[in-house]
Length: 345
Image (cartoon, rainbow, N blue to C red; front, side, top):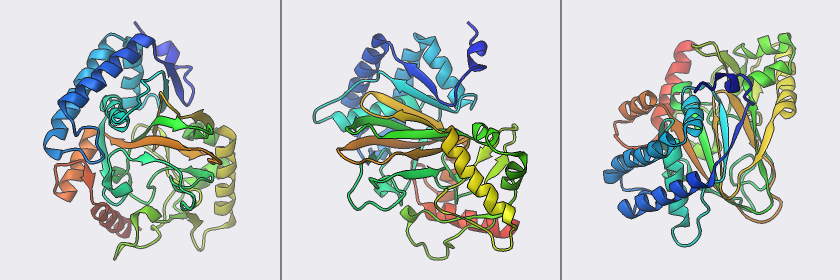
């Protein structure tokens, strides 16, 4: 069956509601995996068994997808970047002592169909799928702030090959219904004039090193000159920008600041909002859009966040860091980024 006519009309975020039989199958598979690999859903899985457990998770999900071709087709197109974001409703709701582990296992089952998981050692204590919740004094524009988390792409300071391709959020609780938003790059530029769009392709901007990486000796606080928009090898428009941690380069003309201000307005005009709560899962392409989060004025919100990349990029990270695992010391990537920027500035 061909779904090409459906893809021609896809929104920036593709919504899916799972039938109950799929929910039951995922629930059953996750509990079996938890029994077979007790550390799989822990904050720090056993590295000796994790690779095999991941392969088993993919096998279980592939079996489920083989009986649900529409869901399989959508996830395959997320993997090949024909679809930039997907919002899944109807996943299992877990409670009890194994709730966190089972949420992480389901996250691995779905995510492994489109790539491979990784994490930076410096972020969230190296937890592969950290549970993100607000803190009263959480820093501004961070996952722990209860205030609005403004539009951004994750880790824009890094050169592309050391950033995540996809970000996944699997909800457990969201008492106030705070929404997560995603603005697709091409929707953004359609709301801007050509003059401003052309300017954003110029290397007239600086990105600040994320505070979550701390102060690393030898790594400058600000990047070298960068563009906000650039064209990928297949002709797609990619975007990289932390709107709250971007400065215009000294010496750039007034159009650079004007275009950046218009970009922020275009993000606000095009962003689509989705509530990530119990039984829902949002995955989006970090290179193809900007995401944000509403304020959390009361109650608890807990989502499991994971970073995903393609297998080739994961192997490249392993080579750079000299490890076979999934958690990497970001210092090596920052050093490589600094060297690359110095050579190409």
